[in-house]
Length: 247
Image (tube, rainbow, N blue to C red; front, side):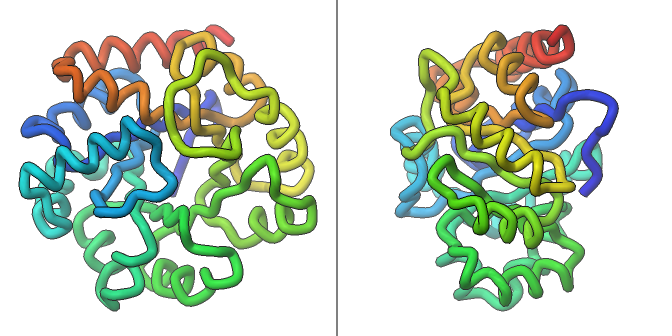
């Protein structure tokens, strides 16, 4: 996938199918400064996600969201910016056509947070066959040698998890974010995007000074679940974009 090199990357997250107008929210993200978008594919046991994303996932499943239904809507917004699907290994390993289905819908990348590095070779090969970038995650607890291997085998970018925990809004950017970004910078030729707990424009600007960009998920989904309109979500994302651009 092609990410901008002339500014810090902003990648918002949205759970597919969480609300009826979810594709309108996707358009609002694109129109207000998103450089790429992570789209969560609902799964019944989202082990890495905190309370907000779990609530969004449950809302989607309660509404009757299915993988096929979500993929059918993706072409409405595909092509404007890179789209990265995020889901769990169960959906990937049980369907040999999974990666092809993602690519046919218009996705450019894939994140599978519960897929261990030691077991990602087959998934990576399937993704590569479909011109999908399999993005790997790194955490503050990842040893240096393993960081190097993650940086070598990841595609598109490296997702740097700022905390040892689940997704969710936090009052401050974790202190471990700076150290992880520094350790990855010396081992990685790909963009490094910081995620987990980045909720405010100030936090996003701070994270962008440390790395190549940020991922923001729970703060967006909290607003969506509380009834924010696409225009209101767009205004929030625009405030993040402006703070990152100002540095």
